[in-house]
Length: 440
Image (cartoon, rainbow, N blue to C red):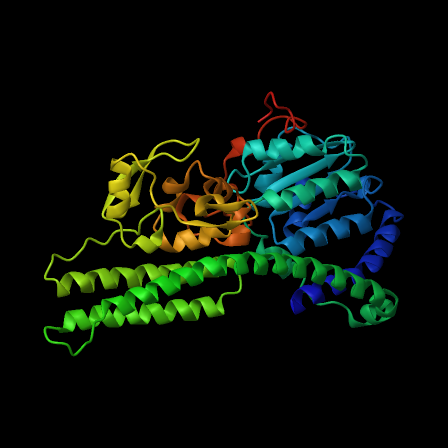
């Protein structure tokens, strides 16, 4: 937070000086606008918004700065360029992406026109098309670009390139800062207040999601503790051996870890470690029970899909969610028998704003909860066609609730790929991004 505040204050102090220099240079003999695409790319590697010198009548410098700050505060790989109407458009997006070399979403305002392209790893082509269509006819450049960025920040995956923060940490002339510091101090405080308010609102949303999730996780931990009590195992009891004692110690450690992880959780994605510990401890209990009863040791399987409190699954069974496609899910013995008899399984339901619902229809915060139980790439196949599965498949999910769920994670926005990208993501004529008939 302190680094972000420093960067914001430095920008606010530098802008008037830079504007004055720009005016002086504009009036100097031989001064020309830097319209070469490599220059545009270089500027975008340093800052998310670039306004060509010949396009400053389209978007004011102060509006460009505010737009850039919004993008940087959201930590998303969204790039905006404002260019004059006569700028060459042939292969514009493809060449800009090649020159910039950074994975992300690129929006260009060209005179009165606007279009965008993105790497499919951060936003699908349909997603880009929808964003462009939504802001066509939005008014002047300021309104249109702000609408575009607001929508983009909610839907784009990945994080901002590191070069933005690196570029803001250079040496700044102390004398210049002192000269304009008193004038702009109030503006700096205002910018800091806005950034802090936005972040505080996001943190409050995360805390609210965590508190709702905490009820379910506490139920899991309590149920696990009750299983430990019912086992009634004593390390010194007759017949106990080292393997039994190791299983029991493992289960106890998992129980303590789950409580500790939950106490330290600050956002929904932290819950993943909790349910991982509970799942690990439950398997240790099942193994211990098998040793005590002289049965074969169980196969290490994921917990029952319908309610992880049922313990490790014993088989896979065909299941079709309402309105979805059939898939194989891991089930406990009791739910396997229910399904075989044509009955509904005993589904884990949780409280929502719409009453009790299955956990896969309860909201995005349950992704980390389920991910701890069904890790290793298993979760995507289980949740396809459910509300939670749809949310996790969206690029914006990883930023708020964490990744690591197999096919649902791994959005690589902001990484430097150079010219190694899918050129098809950036093809088509300028102006085709909002055309539902094609353009990509």
